[in-house]
Length: 201
Image (cartoon, rainbow, N blue to C red; front, side, top):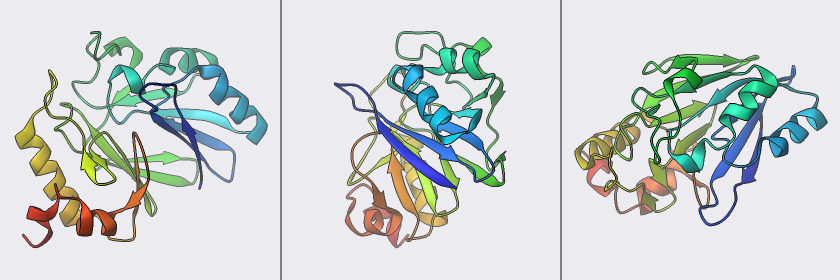
């Protein structure tokens, strides 16, 4: 599985990722910018977009969902509670083809994406594990975590989600978050102040 990274528009610089299977299937994770940017890449790669996978439904992660869906027929996946039709959560239930199930495995061509519900930043946040790469959205950042002071945030849920990641994700897994720099789970266990209480628990 090939992973392409695109950084979204200012001021939030959301990280968008395109997963490319060797047989031509593709998924886009958190399409934040204009759909044309992603469609051009897919055409260049000779890939067919089959899945739009959202780590959560905040406005800065879903900007191109509807246009991509209309252009490609790709199925949209989101967490329960993320399609609210509000300013913060502009995604609507009608735009979502399937709501994730915890520990569900989603095939993208020959690759598999495993879903981990990680509520906290938002009610239906997920992390998506594909091989040795984990797309953490706004749950886990390099040296930081997502905000828990928004309308659908929950600090207690975030603590449980971080504890779960510490228990289940191996050190060598790459952490590709929704904003800013990349990391590894081992580096976050060693250096992220928000994970320290769970490291030896």
